[in-house]
Length: 419
Image 1 (cartoon, helix red, strand yellow):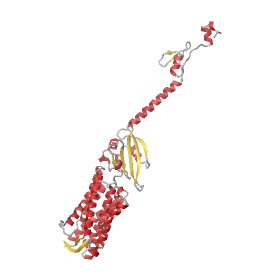
Image 2: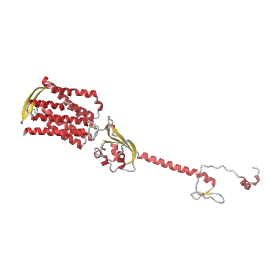
Image 3: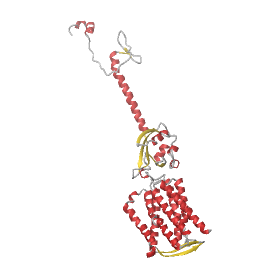
Image 4: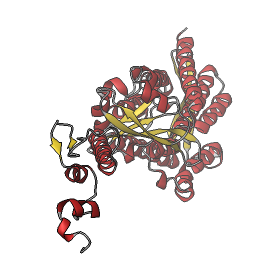
């Protein structure tokens, strides 16, 4: 009965880790998702191997499944390192040369484990032990086993340090994501320390596979609650916290991945009410914004503000792609151009009024009230003016005065014929 309980617990652990692996694999376009899936697959292999190890009583079968477990155990630290570098955005470290160097110890570990009967460098001795109806292996560790342990613990430490360091720069949501990942890894790590130190209350029983169920539950909670592989730091490095332009980053599903303070100010949102939410939900009162976001092309457009319709925003939507040229989201830039728009409107109004004034100056049209006797013209204010004064005021024409022949005869008859 006790044996069945142990086996059932390991089986549950294997099921949780397998479920999390399938989910992570489905999110593999996101940074780090494929390596997290590989990590969970290795844990599943470890759990299944340990399950079969506990289920058998023959030494030969137990040793076979012990070797089978190292298909997952040997490569766990390597995959954890690669995941941490990729999730943190440190892609320049993931060169073929570096990955090959990091793979040397895991490959040798697997070979040492599988060929252990010939040299005993991994296990110098393998015996059987018994606990609550279980047949367990009691091993005396060889030198390469401890090389593998040092490498594993060092890799897990570097992984935790890289993730915490990166998340500290990327906002509260990413700190929550990293906390979930680190917590999920911490318990199996602690269980392994108890097993190796001999402080475990269950001698020769490796507690790590039993804690994988906890790890799977925590990871699955994080995958759904904090959407670890939906909300990745896609473009956080290009966000400047104190820039005047608003910046939003969306993933392929239209989920707000990140938003800077300027965008919060322009949209009237808060980081807690926007990050991780669908834009269709949070921007439903702002149809102009959603219309731009639904456009499948990179473009620039002017839209009214969300808080104040009189506000004018310049909205620039940029499609994001990864290193393989696959779509990975959208970058939206918002700039408040209300003052500039007002100045442009005022300038256009001024130009229009000046043009109208110029047109009225250059052209006289309509009926002009003129005296039939003295020929004075009545202006718009009701005053009578000389013709030359009125025309000079309303056109660009100027006058030079003289006398026509008829007026000379009338006014100066003595000069008639002499001029």
